[in-house]
Length: 274
Image 1 (tube, rainbow, N blue to C red):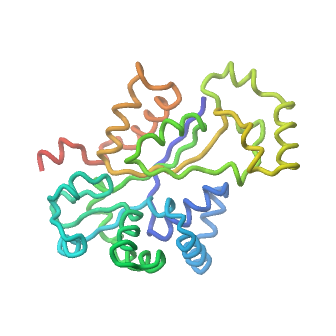
Image 2 (image 1 turned 135 degrees about the vertical axis):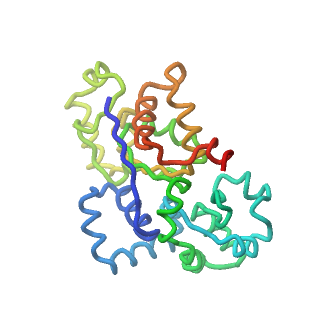
């Protein structure tokens, strides 16, 4: 059983879109870091992604909206149920800003402002306040990059308040080294050249879109997950329980929890005492 997790801090919203899009296509992270040096390439691909409405790539960041601007946009106060009960908003502890899942804001701008998706994206870029990240770093949406297996991500993706973006097997040809079973005995039984010979024949004759149907849940995968602290603590409460959690996701939840120690995120108790 192999699980890995690391915290990710993006320098800009554009970078977060580019990186998550490229890694989901199976491009290795070192190559992506080199590509980021070409700003023209990055901007061009990001605009293409937005035009195609592949908005899952826009979720792995935090936008900041000043309270007065937010109230003018939304026609409601920051203490209204629309904000306090919304999974994609969170008010900063000093009450000066509303932090937002960027995708929600893009879609809201499109609907209320009758904008195209690219126009809405350009409008929302005004709220990319990198200068605020250090001050509000404990309250912001936190991103982790994980390596696990497909069966584990099926459980992870049930947490609807956590934004997922998973590597696609449509763009990769898997090998015997890409098995990642929970139980090593099962993995040993499954590791056979005959299975992958048949899989590779399917890739050649039908393409990856069809060949991936035969891949087991124990196939390795990589994902980005982003959420506000409250959602992460709910995840930890459910998935770190050894009595009810599947061993694979229990181990992964422990590894992610370690990334937030010493305390790097605001807890419900902190908000109560603020």
